[in-house]
Length: 330
Image (tube, rainbow, N blue to C red; front, side, top):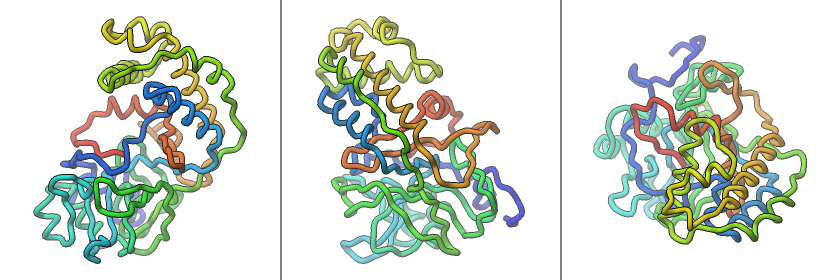
């Protein structure tokens, strides 16, 4: 690809490098939840989440890259590897120590991406997770929903957005969010730690309503309530708490009450105040369908991390995206 060419997608061998044929096994760190959903997991959990939102001053920018790439030196054998989240599989982990391993474990565009990552990613004595952005040489990249416009062409061989470090290759590995790595001619490392929070936030209204909230008692009912909320997000509009409750399947109504959804709304409002208070110190511009937008979101850098995302913009877009691949998102 000529450096002067502006690329709207990332290409290898003439194919768009989207996250095709990706394993969906669980990660060692828990799935990152939206803070407003914390109310479905208990008052204490929601209270801790709100407290963390109030205190948030360190955030990791959530880039909309795909697929997720895990790489580094395996401390068990001293060998460099690349892979997807499937390196953490409980059964049959797919850890690639060579191009031959990649050919055996993966196929299609995903295998192409992993081969080029194997050639150009640095040999750190660490285990790093990053999001694939694309092949260098252009200034516009759309690995998933958001198109990223860099101010000048990126001339490194590949572009990734690192964000998480792990202690080991194990389903129980501990994860630490907030990674900054140095770029090179081989690999451009996007800075995902260039966001800060400006004004303070208040949680008075949330604390006032919390004792009156009725909570789901079983995992199945929590999942169904989350699905119910997501059904509104898909449409781009979440109604008032009374309407959310009235439209809930009758067999789950005894598990929650109207105040459950009022608390959900209050945490969501607090999250949006936090989003308004975040300043990203970078010069990459973001677009969806040609319209300017913000970054997909942020992740709180803490022992209890949550993703801070405008769900009515980005979650709706991802829900309704015309996908011809399998997602592999954190």
